[in-house]
Amino acid sequence: MSTPSSQRTRAQESRAAIQRLYIAMRHLFIRGGYKPLGVSGEAMIEALMVLRPEIYGAITDPERVELDGLLYIFQRLPRGIEECRFVRLISREGFENSNFNPIIPPKRRRNAYRIDQNEMYIEMTRGRSDIYDIMTHLTFLYIEAEKIRKNSQDHRDRNKREWEMLEEIVRREEAGEEFNQEVAFTYLSSLLGRTYDETVAACNRFAVDPDVNSIFHITYWMGRLSIQEAQENKDREITFSSALREKIGHHYYGEIWAQKIKQVLQNKNLLDRPLHIISANLHSVMNTLYARAALTKQKGLETLEDFARELSLPANDRLRNQVSKLAATKGMYQIDDTSGTNISVQIFDTAAFNKAMLPPEITWNEDLKKEERPVILVMDYAFGEQAFETMDELLKPFEEGDTKTLTNVRSISIMGKAGILEGGKGDIMVPTAHVFEGTADNYPFHNEFKLEDFEGFGLNVYEGPMITVLGTSLQNKDILRYFLKSSWSAIGLEMEGAHYQKAIQAASKIRKGINNEVKLRYAYYASDNPLISGHTLASGSLGVDGVKPTYLITLKILNAILR
Image 1 (cartoon, rainbow, N blue to C red):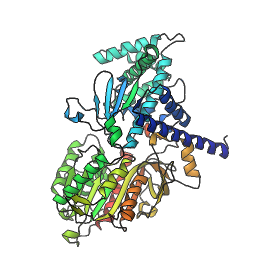
Image 2 (cartoon, rainbow, N blue to C red):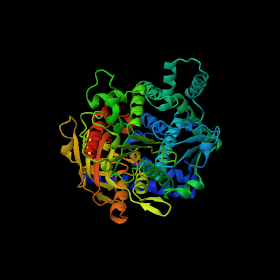
Image 3 (cartoon, rainbow, N blue to C red):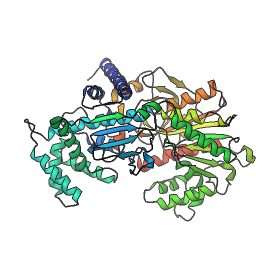
C-alpha cells in the first residue's frame, strides 16, 4: 500500500507533467507545427504517459488499446480524421463560404473541412483551451495507433494475417457487402489487444453514434498511417495557420459575439431593463418557462420534472418544436451565433409573461412595473478560457458611435456540468471559491446559493471550493485525491469557473462596468466522478439522470430572478 508521502510525490509528478505538456503545446503552437512522432511530439507523448489521465484509461499499457478513451475523442474530433496524415488548425478563414462541406463532431461544436484524402482543416474559434484540448486528443490517438501497428506486425515487421483480414473486412464494410461478424470481432480483438467480449462491447458502443466511423474502420486507418510512417517515412504532421496564431488571445470572436447581443437588446428596447445573465444549456430555461403551456394536450405530465423528462427523449423533436414556437411568441428571442464562438443565446423578456402561462413551481412577482421586469439572457456553455473572453466582452458597456451605455446587470448565474470528487453522477455542487489549477489564482466569492437550497430533493449536495482545471482530459486520480484530501477540501472540478470570476471581478471592481452588488449564483451537477473507475466522462453521458439536477438548479435560478 502506498504511503501518504508517496501519494504526494505521485501528485507532484502529475502536476509537473501537466506543466510540461502545456509548455510543450504552447511552444509548438507558437512555432507553427510539429510531427507527432518527432522530437517535439515525443515530449508531449512522454508527459501524457507520466500523467496517465483517467479519461484515457489504459494509455500506458503497451498492447491493450484504450477503447472507451477512443470513443470519447472520436465523438469530439471530426469524422474521418483517422484517415488524415495532415491536420491543420485554423481560425475562421472563409471556408464557410467555400464548397467544402463542414464536418461538425457530435460532442464538440467546431467546423472542420476535409480538404483532400490526406488533410483535415479544423476551425479553432474558442480560445487556447480548445486548441490544447484537441492537441491532447490527437496525442492520445497517435499513442494508440502505435499499439495497433505493433499488434499487427511480427518481430520482422511483416503484417500479420489478422491485419490482412481486417483490410478485407473494411473493404467489404465500405462496399456494403456482408461479412461474418464473429470472425471479424476475433481478428479485431487480436489487433486491439483486447478480449473478444471487450471488442464486441466496444463495437456496439461505437455503432450507437452515427457520427463516428465503425471501430473496424478506425482501427484500420489508425494502424495504416502508423505503418506508413514507420516503413515508408510518410510522417504525420500537425500545423497551425498564421491567422490562428495572430488572433488567439485577442477576444476577436468574443467582441463580435457580445456586440451583436447588446445590439439586439438595444433594438428591442431592453438594454436599460434589469439584466440577469445565465450560463447554461439552451433548453432548460425555455422548457421550464413554456413547456407546461405548450404541451397542454400531453397526458400524464404533471410536474416540471415530468415535462423535462419527456422533452429530453431523443424521439420527441415534435414536442421540443412546440415549446420553441410558443416561446417565440411569448417573449423569447433566439440569437444563433455566426461569429465563431459557437455560443448561441436566448433572451427572455419577462414583460411578455403572464401567470397563467408559467408553471406552478415558478414564483412570479406580478406587481413589478413593465420597465422594472427582468430581462433574462441565457448563453450556451463556454469552453475553458473562452469563458473569460465572452463574459469579459458581455459585461463591457455597449458602444454605438461615441456613446457608451452601461448594461444594467443585476445577477449572473452559472449552471454547469462538473466532475465531482465525493459523490456520484447527478449530485449537486455549490462552490464557495474557484481555485485555478497550476496557478496562484484563487477566486473566493459570495454565492447566493447555499447547500440548504438544494437539500430535501433526493439528491446529495456538497458545498466547498472547486478546482478550475486546465483540461478535463488531463486529470488523474493522484492530483484529484490531493485536492480532495488536502486542506483545499475541493468538492469538484470544472473548466470555466475561475475564468468567469476573473471577468466578473474585473468588470465590477476595476472597470466599473457593472455594479459591485451584482448577485452571483453558482451551482453544478455532477456529470462524472473521475475518482471512480467506470464513472469518468469516457463512460458515457448522464442521459435522463441529468434531468432532475438540471431542472432543479434552473428552477432555483429562475425563482431567485423572478420573485
